[in-house]
Image: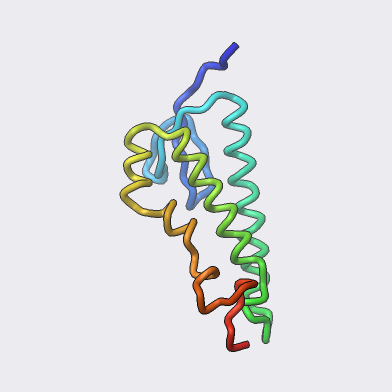
Length: 124
């Protein structure tokens, strides 16, 4: 039996999922209870990665090229936007496609040829 989907309004910036639209809602999605739980888990994971990345930022002499935090944050963010795209309304899907966020997150510069085999610059 398929669960009935409900409309939710999501703000990635504020890590909010709401049942009614407001000014902070960026995306409109259709979710059943299981998908709603998954989306909440993704937002929570993103918050945890964001906190970790923030704590790593001021560490002196720690090269970002040797720190997995930014790449892990991008992975979490990418997974979140894919979920929003898949469950989004036509308007949400159009907004995500026009913004180019999915392709930009999938093609970070970590894998640029100048970053070598292991994702680090050749000039370490």
